[in-house]
Image (cartoon, rainbow, N blue to C red; front, side, top):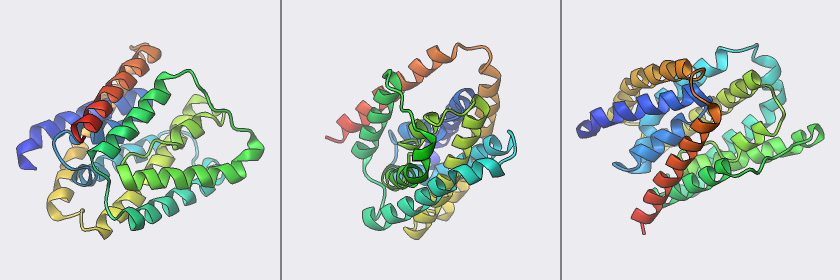
Length: 241
């Protein structure tokens, strides 16, 4: 792992910058790029602390949290249950092919014009289902954006509330993933040390991304972001065949 120290730092600067601009993407970018040089389980272990730090930063830097928690709490319970169940069934994170396929699906959805719409009366039953599905994918791939992010985008929140909602979802997913990794012995001293070290470049990237947010056309950035993820996902999937 020490052989990749500089690479890991650069990955988290880039991943933090993406999160600073878009409010999401740190675990997705980090898992995609770290997956090029190490197994997904090891990459996910390094991801825990930077992901938790940046998501708590995103979560607490906005409006009061409690009303949002009341609205999304059943989804969060579903995330925890799905992640723990997925960890028991899968045993460990899937290989690079599974991660690559997940990235391909997320990128294709992001590049498409399809937009989900959820009516208020559907949230009561759909939230836990989406949470459980997100948790299962988190346990298998280490990436916790699907289907959580499309669902949250479909709730017609304003921009700040949406960013805070994604921070809440990602924080809960990170904590649940950390429990699964610990249960399987992936959270060892070396991984924990590297994860704590990675929080500094991740935070630096986050601050950089927040400054870039007002200077870059959001639509152009989104297109570049999803095209890059698509290419990385294709590489990971094909390299495992």
